Amino acid sequence: MVPANPPDHYFPDPPTAGRRRGSATDLPTQPTAASWNSGSSPPRVATRSAASTRQVPDPVAIEAARRSCAGLSRDDPYLARRFYDHLFVLAPGARQMFPPDMTVQTERLFAALLDAVDAMDNPESVRARLRALGAAHARRHQVTEDMYVHVGQALIRAVREVTGDLSTLTASAWASVYQWLADEMIAGARESGHDR
Ligand code: HEM
Image 1: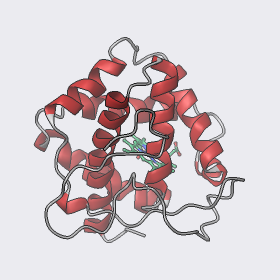
Image 2 (image 1 turned 90 degrees about the vertical axis):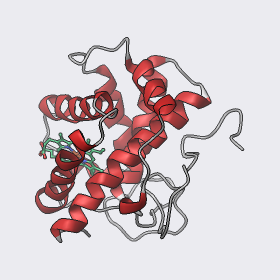
Image 3 (image 1 turned 180 degrees about the horizontal axis):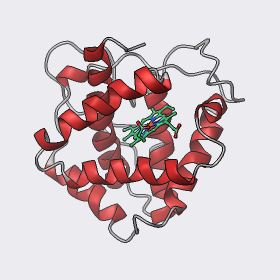
Image 4 (image 1 turned 135 degrees about the vertical axis):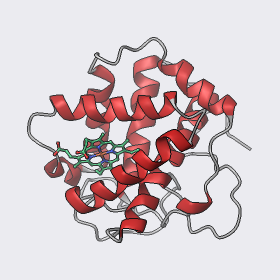
């Protein structure tokens, strides 16, 4: 049952088959010693993701995620900027991972997200790219699996704020779409042997 006004961290979890160790947008359950999350909010950590068992989001969720961003221009950096503002509040330690000038970075991350959402009718067309991106994140940027939780939360906060769409449907749609993207990236990191 989805509450009428779910908190940002409430992400309904689609059914999975087989083994499940948690997911990128699960509500964190234990304190963490990870130094990158050194904000004033209680420490959070995610359980590891069952990347290989995750289902592709259903077409209704994909369509709702697309619709919520339909009016936004890819060249408009405002959504991306708000996303990073939220991320660095949720996880201040993440700031040092990014360059001082975020202009190029904001464009890249959102282009990748929106391209993936566009291509999700044919998940095979984006899976290999996402896995390579996940492997590169772990190897080159030292991104760990628990970091995906904060990125998911920041994304949904930014989409809600910038589009003004506060509906449960849109929040759940983005949660399941992001979950799939993150799980593919995490699977890529694991396959490459660079997961942490
Ligand atoms: C679905 C999730 C994500 C997507 C689609 C995504 C996408 C991207 C893309 C396209 C780039 C630029 C290409 C590259 O440098 O490899 C990038 C860079 C980067 N990402 Fe992500 N990313 C995601 C999750 C994360 C997470 C969870 C973190 C951890 C905080 C993270 C941290 C970084 C960093 C540190 C860079 C390099 C910034 C720079 O030095 O310019 N990303 N990301």
